[in-house]
Every structure is written in C-alpha cells, then in structure tokens.
Image (cartoon, rainbow, N blue to C red; front, top):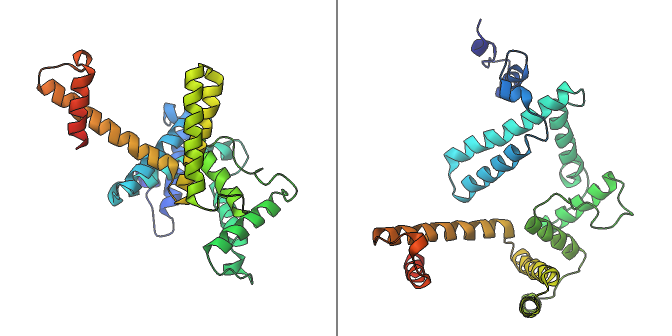
Length: 266
C-alpha cells in the first residue's frame, strides 16, 4: 500500500484525520525537508498571510476560493498542533476540545439557564465570563486586549470595550469635532518641526478616526485595505495611460500624473 492509499479517507475516518495524517507524514523522517524545518515562529508569516487571503475572498464574495483559503487557514492550525504534539504539549484534539468547552461555557443562555434578550446582552455576558475564567475580575478592564494586534485593530478593540461600560461619545458629532481638533494639532506640529510630537498627534488623529469607524460598525483595518487597493488600481491605470502616451512614469510631471489620476478615478 502506498502513502496516498494510507492517508485516503475511509467510512471510519474523517477528512480532518486524513489532513492530520498528511501533516504527520510531512514532518516525519523521510518526509518534506521544508516542513520538517519549521517551528511556531517561522510559521507566523504564513499564518498572517493565509488569514488575510481568506479575508480577501470573503470581501470579494468568492465562495469557491473561500473554501480553498479556509483550508489554508485550517492547515496552519493543524501544523501548529502537530508541532505542539511533537513537543509533548497538546494535540489537535486538545485544541478542538478547548474551543468546544469554551463555547459551551460562554453560551449559558443556550447550554444553561441564563437569559439573554439580544446580541448586546450576549457580548456583555461573554466578556464577564471571560474575565472570570482568566481570574481577571480585579485586573484592569483592558487587561485582555492583546499587545500583538495590528494598530488599527487594537485601537478598535480598546474603544469597543470601553464603550460597553459607557465611556463613549454621546453622538457622532463629538467624534467628528475631535477629529477636526486632532487635524489642527497635526498641522501645528508639522509647522513646529517636532517629529516626536507630530508622531503623537498623528496617532491621536488615527485613534479618533478609528472611533468614528467603530461607531458605525466599520472595521478600520478592512476599510484601509479597501482604500489601499483602490489606490493601487488607480495608480496602475494612471501608469498604463502614461505609457500609452509614450511617457514613462519616472519622466512624467506632477500635472501629467494628476490629469491621468483624475481620469482613472472617474
């Protein structure tokens, strides 16, 4: 029996079991040299890349490729679990059991006698149970916000948490006024030439913009990603138009680029 037959699913096995067997074979002696060299740290770029590629398919509503990208994200979970099992820490079954147990504990309105009338109540209950589980009832309210999150996501999570306890602007106008205030302070620091203060004020401005996005349930990270992609497409169109006219991008004047940019934007 060859390796492919050994890892083919049967009525008594699942595709998850097959995937785990493949991963184990790749890491075993005589398997794949690249897979055998990896560790948790070296795989971090892959994990982030696969997560963002999944986000892209979801945004584009590309269901077929979403299935493929979900598989790539699952592979990262399987890979890290295999590494942990080899080190004697835990295995994939432990991972699945941990998240299953967590879901049951944090949904007492489904698996117990608790009552939650709406999503707001569910989220508040989730946060309270989470703090109790981690023994963080007496810790700072923002204790659980991960330091490793990207800046925009971390800002949004902090703001979302504090809003749950009422620390929030009463309406959008307060946030918009704050944004205008921060823009003025950025302008002042640009004029002063104080780079350190300018960095602080730009951070304050971004934090305020994230707050406005959060109030309207807009993910700032995704919003910025979409804007970056629109910019890339328009810039490429501008470059193509200039090339078509026989003008290299490096040789084009700002007025020429601006003209083609406006055409691409339209």
